[in-house]
Image 1 (cartoon, helix red, strand yellow):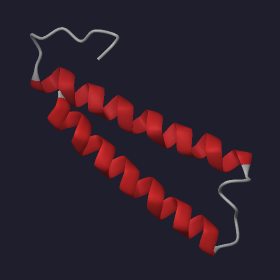
Image 2 (cartoon, rainbow, N blue to C red; image 1 turned 90 degrees about the vertical axis):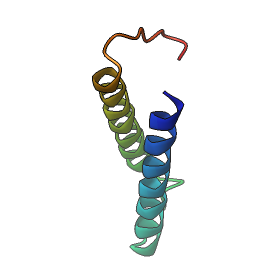
Image 3 (spheres, one colour; image 1 turned 180 degrees about the horizontal axis):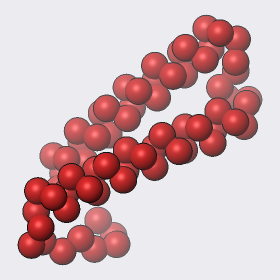
Length: 68
């Protein structure tokens, strides 16, 4: 589980850093604009979904608890 989580965390972090710098370059202030926050949260949720999906496909017999 840790290996999958670290992989998706690294990809998501890199993707969000790139989006932050591109937005700042085009003059959209990512720390002020509330739409940027919603977009970032949706991207984060997308990566969490794909991480959980990969965990379920690689380890079908294991149990995934809420606190994991």
